[in-house]
Length: 440
Image (cartoon, rainbow, N blue to C red; front, side, top):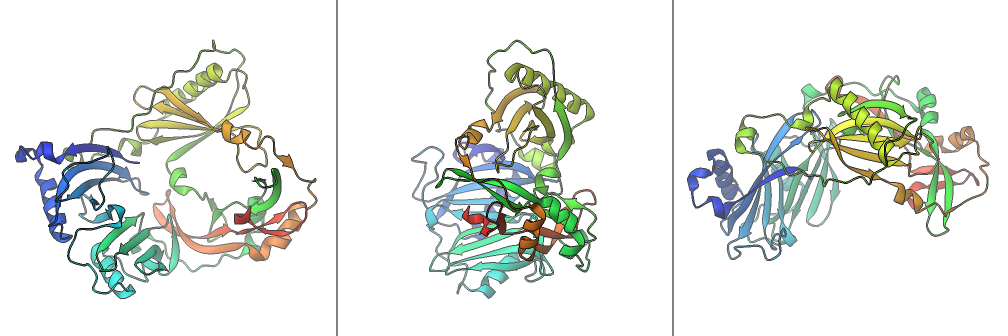
């Protein structure tokens, strides 16, 4: 999913001088740390990504083959037993280790006994995090444990995840660390005071009438359900649930209309190219990821014009039917997200995604979810709505959760205390019955 620059180790090893000192240092440290004496480095890549703080992280991804295997049998598929390891180039921390096929040729176990105390000690040594303060256990199985990030026991969003899996001998098979584990200086500590009755207006606004498609009955079932959102601790502001995306996008909300249409030609899609050359020099210089750059006013105006021209050519009869909602960068492109002006109650809303190459500012490709919408065009609607929204709220309110959660606030660049508004249940808008949303 990330930009990667692949280097064949066997090609480079002929001239050792071409391997950068920093990479050799990481390779040697990794081999010693994880006892990879029965392995050889087959290939490595450098890739970069943007974290929630809009910072660019550089990673070294390595594929270590067992000694008796010298090449891939199938292209792009690593042989069983391969150790795929990713290291943060700047911090030196291990991001993930995966032994392909759940098989390892490492001889020494990491854990003498695979228990909670042992795994906690391992994580604290690897990450510098403190159990109970910054991460807690969420799942414990025979040879697998899963943890998530917290702030003094309170949930965090986006949620950091840690997973460890071993074989019966205590040898590591999988270790991964994803997303943020905030430090104290990144958090605004507060006492949680939010109560559902104090934010009833927000809850009512988030209580939506949604038509769920039932494949069994070939019908659209109308249900009142809560659309998740974060509410700040003082009850004055809301933060979108998909905040990772919203923090990096600009809102346009412009209804597009035209009178004259372009000559309708068959739009020639240009395949998207996510493979960008990343060098160790760029990593060591901490070169900012292009996607971290804000969209300028000039780019914004040009993109609006491009989207308008695109619709006039490809959707000539759709004047006033589309709203340009947002623009955001991703993998060297500017993505324009459009929604249908006329919204329905169906769970899947009409959406159009237009990909604009950020250097040339030309439309390269697009995605229309109309085929998904058409899947349910033949579904019948149930009987007329009989339950009012206020009635649905009264029946549902005792099953609505407002869970304390520290949420990253991009504007203030810190985690602030919020209530996560959600519910697993809904109210059938015809019968008034309480339904479990996951069953629909």
